Image (cartoon, rainbow, N blue to C red; front, side, top):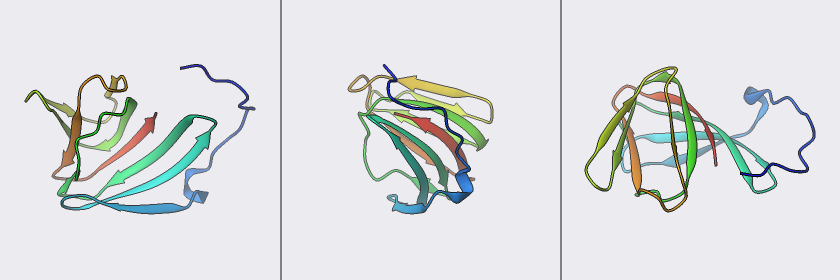
Length: 109
């Protein structure tokens, strides 16, 4: 990732418009900032959220609160709890997320 033409700035996430993204079950609420080709999001998954698709986009994802279950297309499963993160490249390993309890994430892609 090359970051250029981004002046120093501070984001108050509660001031960023929240958009709703339904999952197969549950809802994801995103607060998104775009810096050139870099997208930065604060994402809140509701309890019982299951993504409605397999994602092939690369991310760096940090779990702030709750528990996030990530399933890879090859059958592997990972659990993130607060303070944990994962990273995956574009088109590397298809993945999808779910949570029984809800989760808050910080995601850069």
